[in-house]
Each structure stands twice: as structure tokens, then as C-alpha cells.
Image 1 (tube, helix red, strand yellow):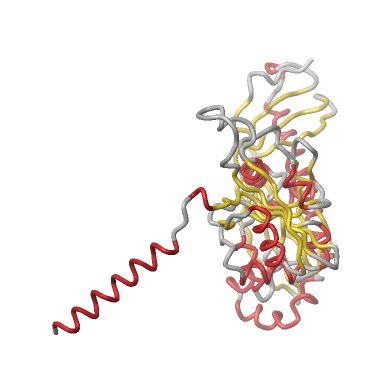
Image 2 (image 1 turned 120 degrees about the horizontal axis):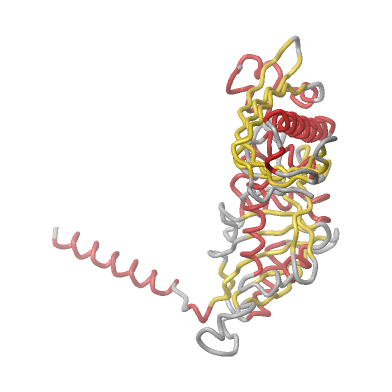
Length: 373
């Protein structure tokens, strides 16, 4: 028993020393906040955004303005490019705080399998990192100052989060992307961003048919896609009335319930949408001249506009045989027998799918500032 206790004590001491040897002082690490990946068909270029812990100044001065730096690395694959960047930094790169991975359009259009392989197998990849695609080069997104934000990568992730909830973008993590990719029928979708020197903006949603990028949805299609996906919580619509002219309407709450069925050999996605509205602005007239009849008419116009956007988004997905709306998964939950019959040739079944919409909009508030001319 004594020998056994001694052996246990020795093992514990060895483990304790091993843990100490793996520790790194903060000053010995390059802490990653964002990663951009570009590929031109021959080599990978990565742009890694790290905290600049050696910034001049002290106290509040050191924590004002941009506190990051960008470093490039090239290689035959992503891991080799990261190693090259590590050599330039002369410090071990730490991905534990990474917020976002941006893929250049060249990579996203033609080499998706390389992206998935990295996200799946690399020890540097984390499940909660946000993913997006750049309109052109990922490096341009990483180099944007975001109006001199403290950490530009953090500002971009906030933009994606707000964009999804407000109907003009999307927010998808590594884990969500991989779940869609490996689902038997579902397809992936990824937000697209455009970069200027001082700011990054949302530029739509890229939808895929397996590994092929088939379309980048425009702003109206993006609105409809997010509404059908129950991702959108609030939003804004401009509509026009013959009596009131241009009208601004806020969506202050939105709920979408969907289910899929197989009817007469065709797959149907049923979507029931409810939206609470607030009248924001009218071009002609005053608030006290807007009657209940006016409000009912505006509600109908909003319903028609939402229907238009949803149909447009649905049609683009079906045309590209992209099931990023997860219709197959929805069908499997409700009607597993029908799903089993169609799942082996799902793309063919998807190409004939139809959309059934039930949209109800109701005014809950009227903004006191909604006076027109």
C-alpha cells in the first residue's frame, strides 16, 4: 500500500510540472482577434489580427484607438501560412480569443473543402468563432480600421450579430456551419461583407449547394431569408401609399413558425409569420389624420412586401437547389416516412418545392414623430 501511495504521489508531481511547462506568459503570446484567409489557386495568404500589447503609452492612452496589429503569412495550406506568420511575430499565436474568420471570395467560391477541413481538424479552430465571406479579399476586411475601433474584429462580429436580428445580415458560427455541412440534406449559408478603409458593411448572404456557391442574396432577398429562418427579430420597411406617400414602418417584433410536408409528390414549406409594427414616418399628413382604415391599409402593404421578399429568397434557394432553409430537416421532424422516401434524391425533390405563406401584421405603436409634411 505504501509503494502504491508513493507511485500516485510521483505521478501527481509529474503532472503538475507538465502543466507548468505548458504555460505561457501573456507577453510571450500573440493573441488573435481575427483571421482572414485568401487563396489564389496556388498559395494561401492569411492575415491575422492580434492585440498589440506593446502599444506606446500607458493607462487610458494605451487603451484608446486601435490596439491591434495585422500580420500576413503565406504557405501551401492554411497551417503553413499560420506558421509563417508566427515566425514574423516571433511569438506563439494564441487562438483562444479569436472572434472571427473571414474567407476571401476566391477561397469561398472554389475551395470550400479546404475551409471545412481546416475548421474541422485544426486545433486552432473554435466552435463559437463567427464566419463570413469578403466580397473580394479577406485581407481587406482585416485591414479595415472600423472607424478606429479598439478591436476592429470585435466591431465586425457585432455588425453581423445586429445584422441578423435586424434583417440585413447573418450570424453563423463554426459549429453551426459544420452542422449544416454534414447534415444529409441541409446546405450552408454564410454572411458576406464588404470593406472600405475605415468601415465594413454587410453585403448579403452567400447560399451554397453542397460545396458550390450558387448565389449571394441581395438585401431584399436577405430580408426574406432571415424572416423565413426566424432569425430576424426587428426591422424596417419603406412602403408607398397613394394617400400617404412614402411610409416608414418599424417591425418591433417578428415570429416565424415553419413546417414542411409532402403533398401530391411535392415538398411544401409552410411558413406562418406574425409581425408587430410601429408607424415611424409618413410623407403626407399628420398623425391625427391617420385613421384605423389607413392603418389597416398599411398593414396589408407591409404583408405584401414581406411576402414579396420571402418568395424572392425562397425562389433563389430552390433555383440553386440550396437547402439552407433546412426544408429537408423540417420534413424529417414532421413526416419521417416522407423524408425517407425523398432524402436519397433530395436535390431533385427540392427543385420542385413550393412555399405556402400565412402573414399577419398588426400595428402596436405609433411613433409620436411620425408626422409628415
